[in-house]
Image (cartoon, rainbow, N blue to C red; front, side, top):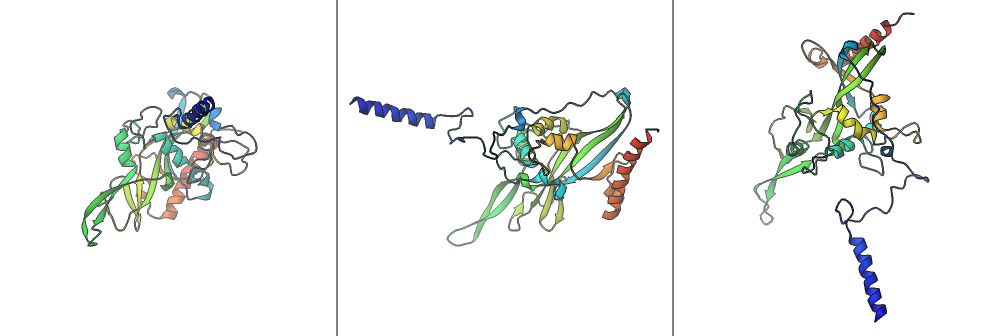
Length: 312
């Protein structure tokens, strides 16, 4: 009898230990270990990395500055470390997945430690948590079919959430300035804007009949959507804690902040510079080849300015 009572108590304790909640309140099965990627104990970048602070800048020390807008196309091979992996694999996440996780769209009730998304380029008007869900989703209407007759009896709205792999480019606004206090010509990113490209379903009707202000037809059924603006300094803490794939050496640990902010190891094309008309290059140059030439001329102008500052 005592053995039976002891065995029952042991089974109850084991079942309770497997069913108990974790720190997040989830009763799902938890990982038994960290992702197995190497033969040694892998240390997360987030365990020891923080964004590197820029030196303070006084307005009186800035004798020249120029604002540049550029686009980073993730379809270019050199930018693939920002796009892949399309699905989270172990400790690896794409930049798009990192931004989606930082926005935490799936939990609108969460308002702490989340990345805000702004509706204006100056990053002064943030979207609400409810508006954020609508921005990162596409509402379509599908015909509702009668199973007996096969006839359409109405329509049904379906909400399709955008995926991080649908982010195909980023628009970046940055400032180049010369600081006479340190005698250096520096660049700092002000804001970043993800661009989503998705396919409009043929047998469905979009929530909007025509593309909105933040959307444009690319070709066929492809729609390009401007998601919103992210203040880069608010994004940097998330970038610094996520390791990026190093195409040259996996043992050299790099975070997204190292790759984008410090090393600037990406390919881009300038599509706008500061001008009195506040217009893009495409607004006054129609040919794509001439647009690229104008973009390279802006780069050369900045390079020559820095070179002409020094005398030998």
